[in-house]
Image (cartoon, rainbow, N blue to C red; front, side, top):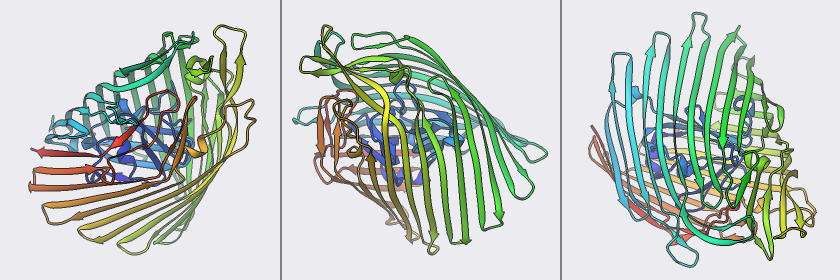
Length: 601
């Protein structure tokens, strides 16, 4: 669990940076406006096995399968907590919650009364600011209004020139909370406009290539309502629905307009002393429009998909205060791979109040994306051949069979640890079947998307939390992971590179020290092992790097905080990742410093 205080003290300025705080989460900056964020392997800009929710609203894109973080730039001051579930979550959350789930909860309007002005200036974060105001409408209801804007400086290319990755974004929204006699009602909405810069080598389907320095653009908004009620029998009922519209333009690839409707109902009840049951129904309806461009064609150009689902889970007390068994599964039907079942069995043993040991076996699936099923896209040139990605409407879902083990221990009132191990077996992973065609003009090398790879993934994760003193807190994380795919015939399939695209080892140490009642000092040290990241026509060896962030914050009065934060202080710049799917110019992440003021009134 990442708390609001963890976020504030980390010095992070974006959600991906915050997620570095969690063990087992691999975060790499592709540029100053794009990230690779994944859990337990398969790194990439569109990490397709990680489901991300904001107040129950999925921000996972069905276009490419993954999260485009540059279009989901939430005000960090509004985040109450971030729950990071490492491992399969398909039995509760459904398809695409394969390697993990990130569940972001924002602050209630009841808890944000009064005003907040926060902003700053820096070398990389050129200018940024958040404004929020909340007030009580009556004894039961509160309203919160907020807005955020930022302007991010470009980094630098490998040749030392100014990078293309500047970023301007604006976001505004509201949240209303009402306390009911036996429940709660929440209504929220937002509008956003994000313009991250980019530079891509764009190849048309007819074989012409040019370097385009341009900006991606995304705009849209959502409206979400949630009602919770506990009836006279103690049953908890929850009903949630949201509408969302997004308009996206990806440089060199095309455009997409999407409208989404999602409805969910859940009920939680107890049966006797031993069973706590939660079950629910869900329905997702999503329609897109993707016009053809010189580089990409979707067939059909518009598609409407629906996803009905039902889930049930029973937490069973086998021996009070000692043995607990959880059984559950989600059942759903999607338009690409059909009917899917995602079961979960989890056993928890608490031999004493200081120790918890658990084991789980699970099945999870990732359904094909719109791009994998329906697109034809030029990726680049291989000599005289136009390299094209060819979608496959017969694509099946990727499947995971998982074994998870864990041990949590409270060594003393000040020291606790969490050790997790896992072994995952993947089937029907996505691969590219080589299909050259020399009898067309221009000749092509088609990469047909198909299911062909099996892989084993195993690893260990350790975190230690130490409250050294009342004013000093240390948090340390270490993760080790190994990806082992089965061999494929290189004459028939594109060579596999994904085992090297996830760091084998990661380490993080965060020190939070209150020097005085008004002065705090936070130091964050991180190490990431080397990578080899490959695209369609290029490959990069990325050396291991160690990063150091440091922040000093002063509160002259309780309502005002002034902080000075330095990021990536150990070297002038370093490379962390490249975009494998879109041929964007690679850049290095630079050292940065910013000054921030936060005033509450």
